[in-house]
Image (cartoon, rainbow, N blue to C red; front, side, top):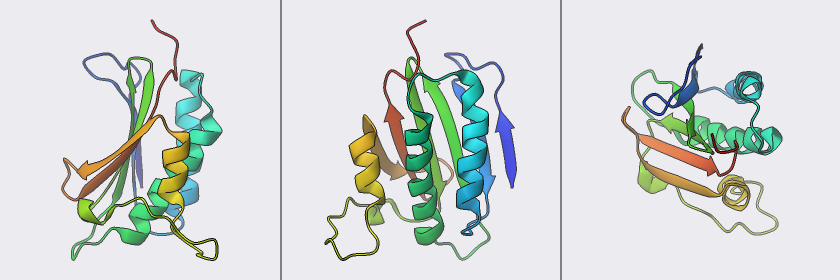
Length: 146
């Protein structure tokens, strides 16, 4: 497991931090813990709890649905884009398999993206620059205008 913090984000380099996690269930609470620890010093005005919940859902999906014949990692990055916070979760799965579901009340799974869709200002799924899939969410007005 590896972590990095970008101490001086700027318009040219807006990344605040990143982590690479093994695709195992134990990585989900680690992602929550370290994201909270690393994003809090930037004093976001948005709910860190909401962001941690959405991150947890996306990392869980990446661990459960990411597939590769080779060794792989779940990559998480977060960025300050103007006044917004964008969080990306990368895995080797196929972008076509990411979809918003409408589970029945009795279904035990399938609500992760519904939570993200209801909390985030926007979310996106597509090909990852690392190969595979990236699923991201954006929270607008996470910081006041500079």
